Amino acid sequence: MSSAIEIKDLCFNYETSSPILEHVNLAVADGQSGCIVGPNGGGKSTLLKLMLGVLQPSSGAILVFGKSPVEARAMIGYMPQYHALDPAFPVTVLEVALMGRLHRRFLGRFTAADRAAAMEVLEETGTAALAKRSFASLSGGQRQRVLIARALACDPRLLLLDEPTANIDPGAEEQFYGTLDVLRKRMMVLTVSHDLGFVNREVDLVICVNRQVSVHSAGSFNAADADQVYHHKVNLIRHNHSCFCNCGGEEAHK
Amino acid sequence: MIDFLHTLASPEMFFLRCAMIFGLLSSVTVGIIGTMVVTRRISSIAGAVSHAALGGVGAALFLQRVCQLEWCSPMLGAVAGAVATALLIGCVNLFGREREDTVIAVMWAMGMSVGLLFLDRTPGYVDWQGYLFGNILLLTEQDLWMTLLLDAVVLIPTILFYNQILAMSFDGTFAELRGVRVRVIYLALLAMTALAIVLLINVVGIILVIALLTLPAATAGCFTRHLWSMMALGSVLSWLFVTGGLAFSYCYRLPSGPAITLVAAVVYVGGLGFAAWRGRRNR
Image (cartoon, one colour):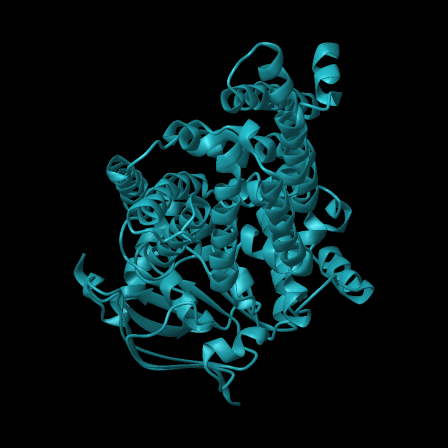
């Protein structure tokens, strides 16, 4: 199977700062789903932005579906963290979902087919009933699902989700995982998360990012008890460290 | 009020009718650009641009009177100063690594200083207070035609590219990923904002121009849930504020700029109160 994402000896740093990513090598096969984990400031979001072509590598190469990230954009659905958006912006849920259909229209209005496609993805994420509501009036979990719907409206082969479980309540979180499990059967899903509960779901790869990147298959990633990780944050931290022990990173003896 | 209407109808009150028509014509631009300024949060850029316009006015008057360049009108100077400043701030924003608010503050003060120095060295009488505080009653018919032209320049691209503008304003990164030319639209938006500012300087002056670019749209934002309806309601409110402010200033013999601003501010506070009340009721 060919690699959907291929990164070769990639380094990244902003002009004056110290390196954020160093000598990253990564290959994700088509159809695999993964979870990108690592400490804050470790470079998770940077890696995501490189895959999207929003940032350019300082050296090395990155290919998505055999193309440069900028060329591959039409095949990528991206969900940002919703609190990066203006909470009072005047826009309805349906209008947000329609933004995912934008690359099909250079000028003018959306067609009935666009609207139908947008309603379909809203249906899929359980937010169709909210279509006419103002995005500003939704709860955190609802906004998150609408943003996933928007990413799905792009009809992507690869779905990139940035911290999808940040700031949503536990009930909504379960529902959310359910939605993702369904999506993974249809497309590649890469999720940035600080929540290792994700890892023990149906994920093929665990991608650890802390300046360097190492990949574990989900099967070998059993260092911590899944249930405990779910309920105690302390275990999550220990888990992270043991993970980086395996990677031979600098965190090894902390 | 009846008195005001009588005056409006009388033949020798051309300037007042001119002002009322201006209030109506400018409302399209104010509603659209104001909505962009409010939702994109660029009101401080608008402030810097309006003050930098004075630099252009000063330079143009100086060239006109000292260097005998007749074509160099204050209006042209204002347009050049405002557009150049807006694009400069925009480029620093997109490509530079400077702190945005520092650049804005520097341009703000520098434009003002350049303008005042040129005006000081320009011989003859210069109505600089007119630029600072505006005088809607000095409008000419030519200004009205310019306003109509600007309405077209703002309205047509907004209708054509509405979906792109909406996506870019809501989430620039996502819009860029969907192939929207975010940088081009952003710079075009800043240039249009600069033109709108020059136009509005006639009405409320450099210092109060921010009021017209924020208050109608912000008030509309309390009642609307679409970007387009915010623009439309913003336009209607802008017309009401300018007309109401003019009537108010005429009846009580007050300067027009501050009167318009205060009328708008009072309605805005009312709108905020309504939004808060509705939010609590729906909870």
